[in-house]
Image 1 (cartoon, rainbow, N blue to C red):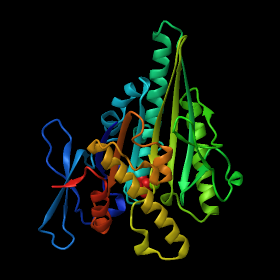
Image 2 (cartoon, helix red, strand yellow):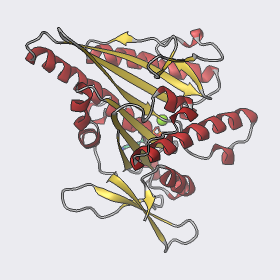
Image 3 (cartoon, rainbow, N blue to C red):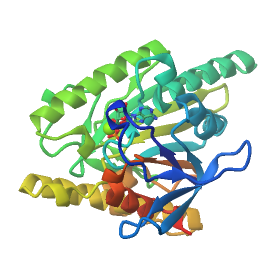
Length: 334
Ligand code: ADP
Ligand code: MG
C-alpha cells in the first residue's frame, strides 16, 4: 500500500480579489512542485508555520497539471490489478468539487472526467494490442455517505430508505454495500450522462433531507474488469469528494447539525488515522472504525491512495485551514 498526501491551494475568486492572503506554497526547486505550505500563527502574524507534503500545488496549477502529476501515473497500476483511491479533503469552499468534478469547459474538467477518459483510452488500447482476445469492461457505482448512512446516487431519491443501504461482509473479508447498483459504461459519453444524472439525484435528495452536499461524502467507484482466455483481472479506482472538514459545531448548533458534524468528524478522523498508519507502514490499520474506511477497505488491499488537501488562501479560513493541515497526516509541522 502506498500513500501520497498533496496540497492544492486555490486561486482567489473574483469577489475575493481585495482579501488578505495568508497561505502560500514554499519555494520549489526548479522544475519541481513545492513540498511545503506556509501559514502564519493565528496569534502572531510574524510567526510562520510550515507543513510538509509529498507535493504542493499553488494557485496557478491547472486541472491538467494536477491530473497529469497525481492521477495519470497510477492508471498503469490500475490495469495491473491494483486498487487506486483518490480523496479530496478540506474545508467547504476550498476547491474539492472543483478538483474532483471541475467545470464544464474542457480545460476546467476535473480529476473524475479525466480519469474516466484515461481508463477508456487504456482499456481500448489493451483490447487492441493483446493477442489473447482480452476484453475490458468498465462499470461504475456512485453513492454518498451521509450521517454514516449509504445512499445510492444511481437511483432516484424516492427509492431511498431512511436507514440507507446495509453493509455486508463477504467471505473474502471485504465489506460491500448490499444492493448498490452498478452500471456498465462503454465510453466517455455514457459516463457523462450517468454522472450528470447521479449528481442531480444528489442535489434533489439533499433538498429533501435538508442536507447539503458539503455534509456528505460522495464516492464514485469505477470497476475495471479485464477478461482474457485464461484469467479475469478486476480492480477499482475510487474518487471521493469528502464532506467539508470545517468545525460545524462552531457555526451551527441545532440538533440535526450536531448529528451531522459528529458523523463527519468521526469519519474524517478515522480516515486520517488510516492514512497515518499506512504511511508509517503499520500492520494494523483502524479501517473498521468508520463506514467509509470499511467500504474502501483502506489499507487492506495492495494499492495506491492519494489524498489531495484543498486549501483556500484567505485569512477568513485561518483556523479551519490550520486544523485541516494538521490532520491531513504526513502534513507534519516542521
Ligand atoms: P468545495 O467543494 O471544497 O466546497 P468548490 O470546489 O465548490 O469547493 O470551490 C469553491 C469555489 O472556488 C467554486 O466557485 C470553484 O469554482 C472555485 N475554485 C476552486 N478551486 C479553483 C481553482 N483551482 N481554480 C479556479 N476556481 C476554483
Ligand atoms: Mg463541494
